[in-house]
View (tube, rainbow, N blue to C red):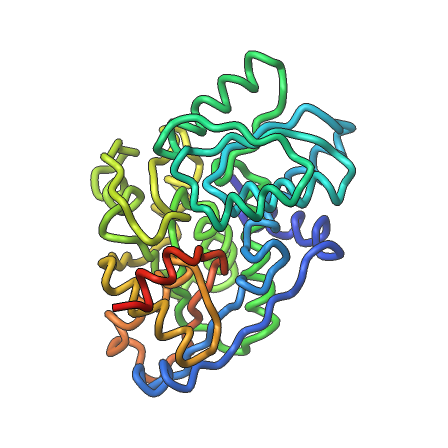
Length: 318
């Protein structure tokens, strides 16, 4: 897969539909790391996460092929919201399959759209497999949350924005679930400068991509509960993201649930923003590695904003 081409094609398709999200300088984290640390605020994107980039790109790609109906996806929430918004924006209709464990905050956001919600399974990989089978059986079009060239291309448009926003870019910390975000951003940035370090950030409770790359193949892991529900769960065996991550991700950092909590609180206390668990992975990971980035320009991707009141109570009420 030519990641750079997919990202450049996506940029042309979706630019008029999305926001160029700001980067915010972090005085606190910059002082801690003795460099310059910036937050890439995808929590300010339409539907409150980066996922709109990939979903819009895929549906616009289908429209270019003359395909205007029969869309199915699976999602733990953010991809689903992006898919639902994109359908409505483009005058299309489709269905979303969700795990029964989907967070209340993300479910509430989905109910605002004219989209059919269906439930299957506990782990997102089981939900994805089931939705895929339904699409095949009903001759519809399954849209993966990550295992798809146009989804990866859409997410990678963040890399194009970072090019415009920063003259010097030394390292980017990216949350990883199925790998669509880091494949797009990392694959694109590596295509223009191989010296940029791409750091994958995962929770200790669900480090599927990290463990898969260590083993040299996509593995199955028992799901454990994590505040980073947006990155939790398995990976499709044939996912194109596996090989892209193998080529583009330089390092991984795994963080504990307590470290994720502290990062959520830090973003609130220092930047006055509420972010979800997956978005805090990049902050928590940077703090564990901060001594390595003295005098460097570092970007932490803040991937989404959706956090439920119940989770906020667990994080802020000790």
